[in-house]
Image 1 (spheres, one colour):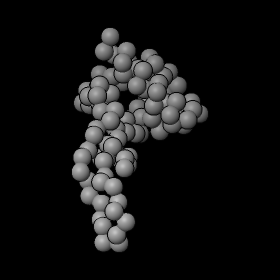
Image 2 (cartoon, rainbow, N blue to C red):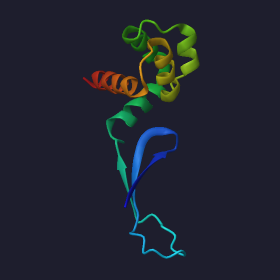
Image 3 (tube, rainbow, N blue to C red):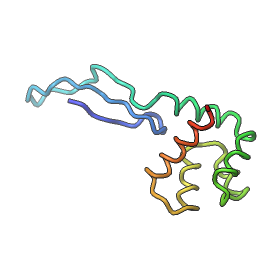
Length: 110
C-alpha cells in the first residue's frame, strides 16, 4: 500500500510504503520504507532563494512586476507565502503558480 503525506510544511512529498493489512483489529500499520518524491533541485534552489532573499527580490520583481514592496516584505523568502501572494495578485490556481515558480527556479540555474 502506498500513501502520500506532506513533509514539514514544504511541498515535497514522501511515499510511505505500508505492509499489507492482514485484516486483524490489532494490526497497526507501521512505516516500512519511505521514498522521497520531488525533493531534487526545487527544494535546494528554494533554500538558496530563501537564504539570499534580498538579492533575489530584484529577480522576482522582473518576473512578477505586479508585486509590491509590501508583498515582497510579507513573503520574506518563504515559498508558501510567496505562492500565496502570487495567487492573490494574479488570480491563478495553486498548481499553476507552483509550476511557474518551479520553471523560474530552473531558469536561475541556466
